[in-house]
Image 1 (spheres, rainbow, N blue to C red):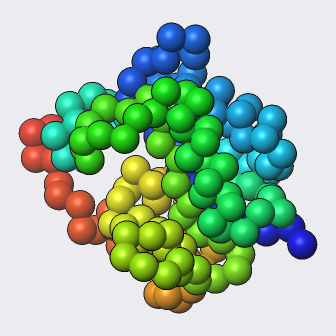
Image 2 (image 1 turned 180 degrees about the vertical axis):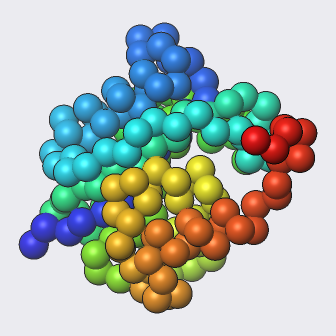
Length: 171
């Protein structure tokens, strides 16, 4: 049985072979396909400011995948791809060459037993515009199984909560 997953991709560090963060995202998408996942849709790659003290601008995107893997097996595959790109565990808000996260899956809610383990939907995605913006470009009508709101609705709520940039003059 094939599952559908919405995943988030992010990078804010150059890679020796793939170049700037946008190139890392493109190479990660190719790696997902080479690892047996069907990439069905991909959002545009968006430059976004860092969350926390990371300091470097991120390249963020979202992809819709089809895979036979269940969520823990897919997460293990994503972590293996991150390691192949040079990702090392370290500071929580530090620079990273590649970050791959499962955001949603067509099976609804998944919770692995134990603290700090896999949770789908992703615990924090509803508050992160850098995830919601690209996600809304590919699956705007996907409904969060916990909140019963679509990705489009969650994005609109997050936009209302985000602070207004008052440094720019109004048009």
